[in-house]
Length: 457
Image (cartoon, rainbow, N blue to C red; front, side, top):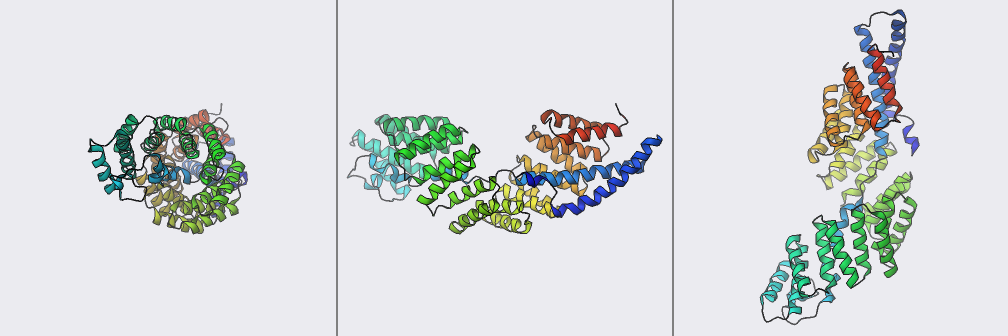
């Protein structure tokens, strides 16, 4: 992976080379001027600007290689909530008693949700129904509300079901799912705890593990996935989810081992191939990553995520045309995904098509105004276009969104230096050094700025 940092991509190398040649000539002139104590002229200042631009081009190329190494879209994060509802009606369908009345409410067969809600409502409002039947009706109606993404009504019905039957594990379980889908992971885990206490099933541990993973607690997630696998060694989703937890911990080998096992149990699951591709990419095995993304696409050609991810690997391999083709496809499938525009913008930037790059970064920002990275990338593009003012405006936005990014201060400092405002440049270099005291380029840039201010101490 470190090899990606050694040299700028070929498409920027000639641009950098021309600028370096200019700055090399300037260095010679500056040396003569300094030795003879001559007054610095406008010509000297122009040379200094050329030198700064040369460094900026080099740094931009290196940053793009850094960006290529960033994590790719995690499929499991997008599919977690959606997958919870798969088979929602039948997962605990047998937990309630089989009732003769209102079969549309309690039937295990697939029933239109509106029809089920109406049937269950009739049962709930029938005062002659026993408490056990009404509890089942609340549970079934809650599931139906959840299927319609009305989680507030679903939770209200699960509350009623639990009130009538506090030992109903399924009601706790599905109320937990609704809490997850509402974004309240803590309440979800509390309900999963109760469901496991009442009826310790493999999927209950697995879903609680995914809730822990959503909270960023990979270790607790793995413990729950281990338990899920011990209860059901044929549960492909448990291996898949545990692989995601290992991936979160940076253990790519264990992640791949779990994805392998999940694929052996469920070879038609495109999502597993996508995530295994991510693990291979993190290990630097681009070809295996591409092979897994290919397989994910063949199994689900309408999913934008593996196209986006494969584009990132093509970009790493410096095949920018293939990368752009994949981003095009990702955008056609999911035109609201900001990261696809951002990634395509970087590919255009590497191809030195600054106008298209800026257009894509702009669209990424419109879709996600809080995307700090897109602001930074657009700032880089404006810098290479020679518009320091617009570059600084984008770096300002990124710093507002992510004040701990040393690169943003360093690059804004370079833009201030290009404009000849060395005091502001030095202030930004100071901040970059505070955040990342090991960045040698920040010290070098600050030293040059002091020197060109005439402060040699």
